[in-house]
Structures are given as C-alpha cells and as structure tokens.
Image 1 (tube, rainbow, N blue to C red):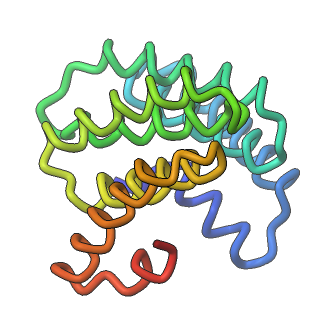
Image 2: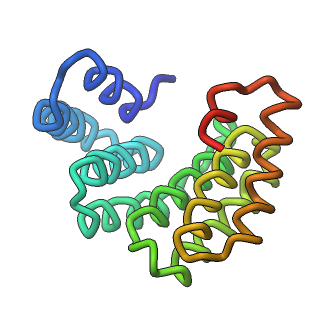
Image 3: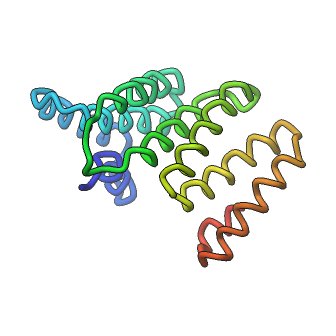
Length: 168
C-alpha cells in the first residue's frame, strides 16, 4: 500500500507545489468517499493535516489530525499494524501546537512513545525522541532534551541510521 500522503510528498519533491498537491488530495477524497472505508478516511485526514501543516495553517492541520486520530479507532483490520500509524498521527498533532504549549505537546508525545514501543517501531520512536528533544530544548529543559537525544543517538549508532543521526 502506498499512502496518499507519501504520494503527495513525492510529487512535491519533483516540483509540484502545495496547491497542486491539495487539488490532487481533494480529488482523491471525492473518489474514495463512496467507499466508506475507515482506513482511507484516516489516510485522507492525515494527508490534509500534513498539507495544511506544510502550509503553516496549524489550526486546520490540527482539525484534520484530530479527525484522523478519532477515525483510526474505527479501523478494524489485521492487515495493518495501526500502532505506528496512530503514533505518527499523534506526533503530527503535537507539532500543530506552539512550542510553548508543552502540556499538549507532551501529552501527544507520551502517547506516541507508548504506541511506538507497543508496536516495536524503534525507528519512529527514535525520530520522536529527536522531535521531542527539540521541544525540550526550546523550553530550556536541557536535561530532558539531552536524555532523549542520548536515546536517539544510541538507536542511530546501533542501527547505522546516519540520516537520523545527523538530525540529533
């Protein structure tokens, strides 16, 4: 399965702008609406949230990520491990809040961390630690930031993940 969000980001990488991506997403939504498929509704809401977040329209992004977060609980499938997807939606949702709003950010980061741990998704968990550490650094909570960065760096070294290591 190729998610709609990753398809749009691939198009952006090759020169399609955000407006074109939004039009493509709206067309996809119209085409898929008749299927009444909860999984695709999650994917489309996550996609719209990502597009609005890219355009820095954070209130709109938050609305779509909240919808995705609620709808994913209706998905009943054994084909997909939903823990990681739920975790990523919650990370995206956290990123729609201002850096000063540590209450909401930390709430969603903690939930994401639990879901990644539950699903055994070490890579996304390490990415979360890097993102979460940025929030702590911004809010001058350096010990917490350093602790998360140490975990992220340990994962990167153990798994030869140079791309994530360069961000940590």
